[in-house]
Length: 536
Image (tube, rainbow, N blue to C red):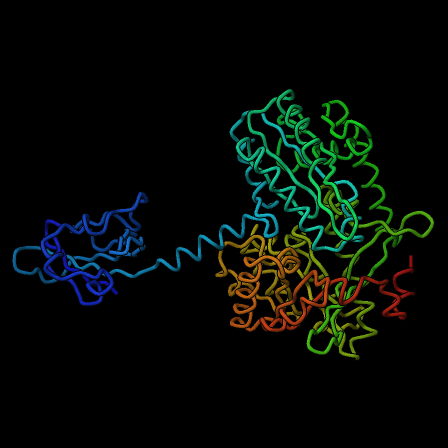
């Protein structure tokens, strides 16, 4: 570490050998020079007060430029010397080189805000940027676009081709409109643009530019020509929403209207139709959810979580579907957002927990565990612990074979609550998991603070592992830190065999994804649960 003595005027009167070695200089070249000249102050203010001799102690970060021209960051801790040296009061300054830490923190922050595949901003950052823009009180527009028939690209030419096309779309949007506003990949084949200050005319002008640009963006793979045709929805604030969530819902509705519209391929939402359509849609799904909860109108599915080294299955994640007409199953994306907005999600979580525990009773003796997802709202359910106690008793399920998952985003949103709920769950004997890890944390510090047994690495990093060096860095880092905290890592979205040896080399024990096992009905895995789930 650096050790420097300053006189009452801030001039260097003593310097240790370590500092001389790092700075590649001689002592006589530093003695008598002002500390502020040798180590220029950063723009940020000191931590802990002014670094004057009259202050008891202070901390600050300052720059050091080496003889090779590299800039390093030094964290300085200043304190007055208890025994003044000859010539008057002096202070001792101890410096720690934190350059690598600052670089790592900046990189993790970048990764937390970015989509690893396209390097555009991610959903989390976009929502925060939209919320801040709306707080500033200006008008603006959200453009939400979804690629048409993108599923065909993956099925016909494989996920690597689909990823290439997504990167091409991202590059096109950024090059043409990056100067206009925030551009993000929200996930899958959805992209969004935030145009702060834009009115309806300006938003439509951009939309009319985007559609032909993407139609001319494409690639050839395996004899197929894939084009990035898209449907685009436009919502304006404050006309179509008072907060970021409402604005995204309005833009989503506009995008689906664009898909229905045919030739034009873009749609600007009108205030009247927004209110009418959203109200009708919300009332319809709220009633459907209420009936399904009362009449057991849901179906549970399970997807295996596979031990990579021998493909053994001892864990299954429980997935929820709603029963539709003629035996069809309705995906959660159609009803979960409504349940969250209406407050029904807590009842829904309890329904899943009750039926999962009834099923668990029949397979726990075989060493099989079931993992159930809890919503962010359920973390604030004061009766959750008592509900679990009663249901564990009624079902006869062993809590050690129940894994309760919460998402990283839910944990970050209310860290203290999440930590308390997770600990109370573990106190009952259940195990816990942190889902979608890697998209929200800017620091791994929280990982050691949360009482979880499993860390599920977000599928966006796994999916791009073979092609994106940044993903390999972050996945390896997560795996190492999981091991350091004695937590098991689970890789999500394992969709090809080539990923397995790479994940194993990182020390990741478990994997989950279509290559390892697709979701199937719970009753196909646990036939004894049929009577419980169908019971009205």
